[in-house]
Length: 360
Image 1 (cartoon, rainbow, N blue to C red):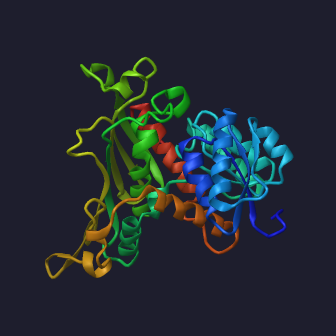
Image 2 (image 1 turned 30 degrees about the vertical axis):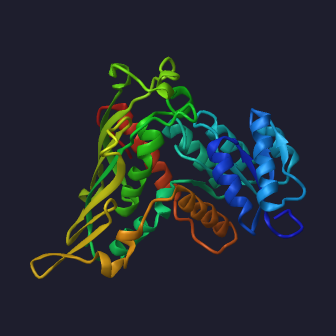
Image 3 (image 1 turned 180 degrees about the vertical axis):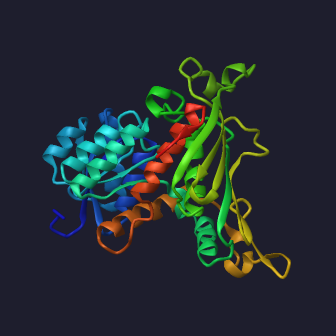
């Protein structure tokens, strides 16, 4: 730590919606970390986030502003770099930050390809620094309840999971609909959350093979709302994806990820089956096999949570940032491991590849 008060010095690269509303806000709220530098190719955007940091956290001095992340890394003594850019530049920034001696928290999707993800993981290992990708659905209270249920044996041995994401719109607040920038559409940017969650709840088994199919129906829609009309010339990603993965020990996973789902069914979830039980995320339901039948133990395992839970992105991302900082300070063990980050990227790559892909 380079700050006089002992707090972690944090630099944030990418000051759009996620970098400003999530990373900067949650670091400012954390007494163990301090935003000392902000970088964005749009200087005005970084300056706006800096003003918010000062207003919310009474930061003195005000965070330094950069438009070149390399200059920020060279001139600032950073303990942590948080990378909130699009996926096309995230791997290079991550590797450069790790090589400078900083720890890195990066947004999802991890990269454009498995090769880039492996380069990021290798750089973290060689630099002996903590790299974590923010698969923040793991920090949802209902997901944590399912994880505790599985760890206590209520599901038995996990055998199969279905991860499904039926999003009602397209994330047009950033160029997530441009493949060269985003790395993919509905799966890479939306469905990856529940896919990672299902993989984690299955026990993070070793991936053997994956197959899938990705297509787009955007161009076939006869009419579009104004926000989608504005991006139709640049839209070149998939919005309808299905995949199937085989893991060690006979464990399997199916994945569905769609954009432009009817609002009546728009939601995301995970369903899991084990040798002695069942669990679902939406709605939260925990069932275990007792005396020849399933018994609903949701209220026993998670009192009141099924009725009261509402997914709050700010709450789970706040927990993600707090957890990452706690890991750096030796107060927690990383909830997301290099094996899991690599497998998530391998799943995305394999599903997009279309035909069955065997992995070592």
